[in-house]
Length: 176
Image 1: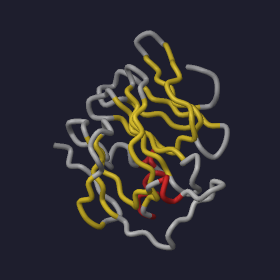
Image 2: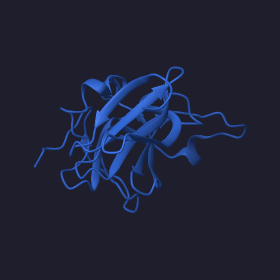
Image 3: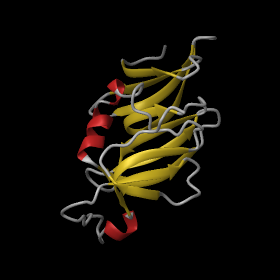
């Protein structure tokens, strides 16, 4: 495998590839895919990665990264593992409980299912942010004092608008 110390790795659901996150600081800064069939490894994403989750069909990774413009906010992205195409979904302030899941995601990747069984949607909790509305001239963000945590269903293609299914702090898909 490549240089650097792996800080977390996760096998794809079919067991054919290993996603490896490496770090030189607080967040992971690279995400690579290792193929044991030919012992190859390729960096597929670079950023301030907090967590990542394989889709059930092995084709995508949901990535949570620090927002580059709003402190304490996170961006959800979907990475197509085959093409490398990145689809930004939303920027949000995570609920405290869901933030805990992200901070310790290595312990939750097998038990907490954020992907729908058909790999078309994700479920997340917290408050979605309209980045353009909260950014002030000069780049400072003006956020509300409190947030109403909602359960959101996100379209993995980024085409459909997020759908709130109600208030909540943690949610998960059934495996079937």
